[in-house]
Length: 285
Image: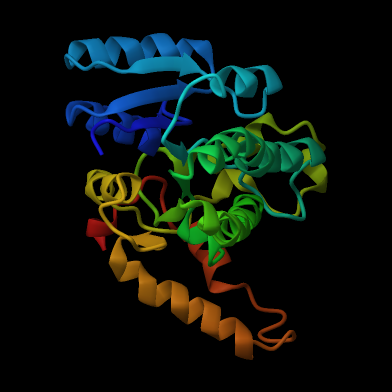
């Protein structure tokens, strides 16, 4: 596995950067890509300070020219990690923000994957990993745009898994729970950039926060690396594992949920968004 070249998108921040740096520490051949050029120089500096060697390039997955550039590289393992979070109620979110959510999280990654998948088919070998989310299997209030994009990511990964198996191309997902990387809390600041009429909003976004306690991100890295390197053959990988029961419970609940259930009452997750403070750590509860 040490000779395999690994391309990680969205490596300028969060999980993508953590995966890239850790893989480089282990002597892996890494191409770390970032959304914007400024992140390239920042990551180059960090890698140099740690004495790490890896190729760092700007690849905006929504940019056709950047995708074309990336296809010139020989890649054995593609890690589709690039993502954004457009927080807000589906009743309130402006059209441009909603479309951007899907362009970055779904359309761009699928188009990028096409080029690499064709090469993997020709070689009769490869691995494609989608960094999805538990939000691709369960939802929470005010994260509907993000969850919708991740539910779609789950469909894409599952479909590709069926379509590419005859060509010996493995597909797997990493499904992180709520981790304290800043990603979730930035989601609940996204409304500040909305070009809309605040008076028409149903909800007051100055009063709400991400409605989950968040875990230490360091614990995700080791499990995520195992998926990327194929050291586990599990297709779906929910991290932390203790969230698996919660995900399955919510999925099962929807089979019996009534459409008129608790009408007139605020949902508990909506209320939690009002009650919880930003960057609340899971160990505090």
